[in-house]
Image 1: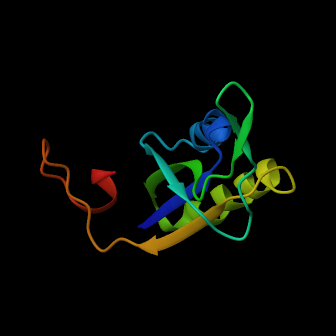
Image 2: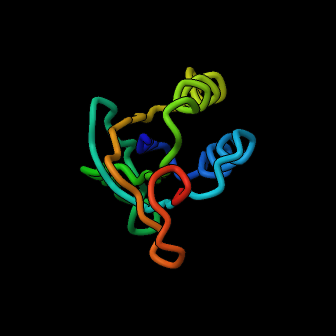
Length: 112
């Protein structure tokens, strides 16, 4: 099992959710996060538009899902095909040693 973490602009949440749904991924979590990287934030008008402020952190959405090993490359390819050259963001993939469903007590792939 692998954990896929996807960090994208807020407006891309529906796109990523659709890609996961198209690949039969039933579960995901998403969080509103803020961070900074190579891309600088755009200045924002404040105070009736008379002043400009450049925020240090850029708002993003972080999406997490756990998938079977054989689905990882398919999902990553779908994400890259739909999102690359349009937005900034990151995809992180890590190993998951064990998954346990609390309600059914099932373990491993059947728990996801």
